[in-house]
Image 1 (cartoon, rainbow, N blue to C red):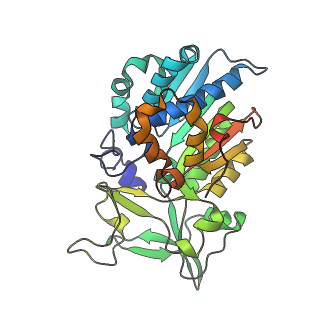
Image 2: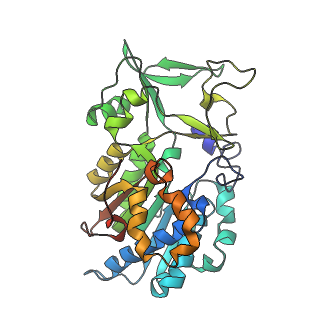
Image 3: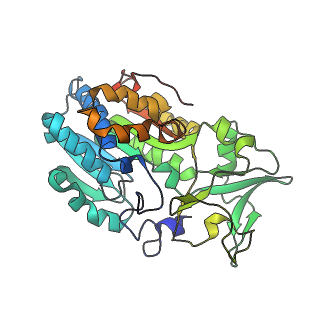
Length: 352
């Protein structure tokens, strides 16, 4: 999965600066227009105000976008911030974190008139930062381990030289430890994905954040639902041409999983285990401020949105029940800031 997505020459994400949108393979909240970035700018401005008014007043703050792609979301956020909160825009330092060299190469052009805030563009998080980290649909694109519970115990899925999958011994004891730590019980015949990369990433990000907030937005479930009979075949799937994995194509064997077809030509993704992500963050000193559906997050920010009538269609897409509104979850974390009431949590804190 790592090679298929991130190989520097052949990887799906490495070969293009943008993969979402009408001309791409899938649709994200960023693709509805600038309104998503404008909403996030409302929350960012409030978080920066809280940091600036604290006992350790900041003269400059960092905005870190992890999984930034070509910088479209940060560009929308910064333009709204520049328009509505010029003082905070002037004191902000932007760090774009993106694995794809092609996407990084396009960032300055995409940022355009707000490129003056960009201080770093790299594949890794800044060594140390203070401010706000935003990651929109990053965790679901991290390579995962797939495991299967058999009558002989827990096994891991491997790929043989013929390109077929088979079960074998676990590659690391961390996989079994992950399930035990989360109180997760898989029944014989069930398959599941374990995202150790997400756990490692949030731990690393927590250590690099000196003080501030994190906003993580992605699709997924609490562990009790993700690792249950309702997802007994796992959630690993592909996206190509706005269609998810839908079985073998003409001339292909039915036994070939979707994610083994056309490596480097399609997106591969799995649902996020929010329970484990939150636990890993808290183990590194972060506090959970809220976990809620994107619908309620947007409704909390909407009253402060500049001219919301100009973005009615986009707002409906972001709020749609059964669509982005309820599928996407928002996890807000803090470090050294307590658990203040925030605009994004003012409507309702609920995850369906």
